[in-house]
Image 1 (tube, rainbow, N blue to C red):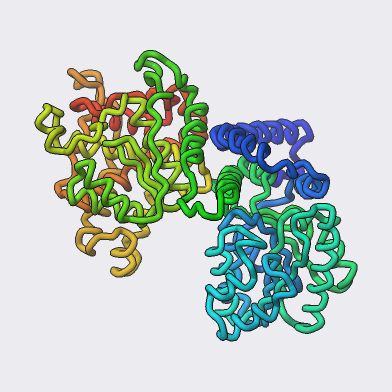
Image 2 (cartoon, rainbow, N blue to C red; image 1 turned 120 degrees about the horizontal axis):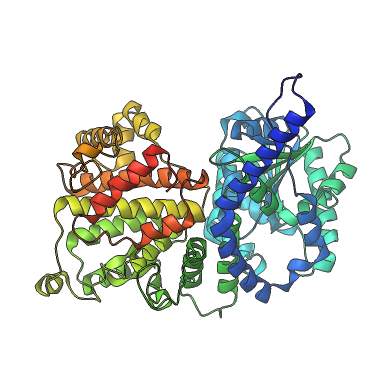
Length: 590
């Protein structure tokens, strides 16, 4: 909240506060609309399989943390953790970011001055001797995983949890298991809390000066659960609770003016950090439920089709699109029949075979394989399919938007499995260089915009970020751009000069056929360097679109028109790009 001069009248304060509340509410609604549509669908599926969600023990947690006092920076959180005695970190078991967050905390040099102890719910206290053998290097990862019965007694994803254990051992932190049986019976969950409190108190007696970090399921961290029990056993202990990604706090923070809130102070000695969205949490949990529902002999990749379709549905509802429309003017024609095929695979060899069968060139195959390795997934427009090797919300949200943009235009790039040579022979029109470049820019812009609508935590890309690349080392620039140094500098120069252009309407006396300035030509280079420029220019434009949407200058109706514009026709992409930039630069409502 802003500070006011003491001379400000009560009426003025009320008026200003009302305006601030209105702005906060509008921002929250605009940032959350598409996610809420998508979450409603996945929550229905989870409730159908997991009826325990309504139990009182779980409600205690959700009802305890509804509001916060102030926004924090990551450095504020690190300082609070460094000054604490015991830190209880909430774990949403199905979300890898929950475990990886604590791994980053362990790696922070700020804590090197103290001995650090890590306690985890994942491992039973009875198996401490197994954990100690691994910590001393006497057994390997596979033996540890098998002997603690990870799949049988826990069942969540192993990789992020093992990354946490490894980070602890690498930094000299002792590791202890804190849990006991039975895990499946919620009627006994209070006994597990008491057991954990006893074990943490024992750790304090054993390591009197250490920073004790505890990763435990989030529902155990309701004030009257584990925190209260621990305070009873250690009344002089400085106990800090660090929650992660609590839904109510996330939605409330969506009303803040800043791009992304990374942490908040809920109350004294209670913080909440944000490293994922509620939609990301629940999609990961749905994937766990899918895996648990299979037979022991079914080792196929998880079914990511429902995840992609749910993200598409979120964007469809956000844009106000009728999936059953019979025409392709103000609505895409029969969108419901255009949904992409989703390949859930873990092997690049399978993708290579698919691309070869469908006639992709060697250069196209290399480019798409690189994107899969970097992003985890890729949308293949010529065959209207999404290939997913690993689920990442940022990439999947972008893939869902790329499909929707293609579908709104009637899938113009679809070749129905024909090889590229057959397409050319059948008279498919080839675009000139400028057309092709601006189509790529426009597609990247809408893809980036859509990914931020579905996943607002994705960082914006702004002109200042491009300018900062001039100041990093040669090696870092080549790594970040995946280009040789000279090519990277050429690309940055083009982006900087292009973004400095003054997009505006011509004076009436100079308009002729067009009221807009002529679009600048495509860059004078090709290959990976041109691809990089098109992507970065699109992402910069996507950020402009998202900012204009949050400010109310771009309505969902105007956005829907952008998705429906047939930019594959000669000259349309360049004209649409300049028109869009002119509107965005002018500050007018589109």
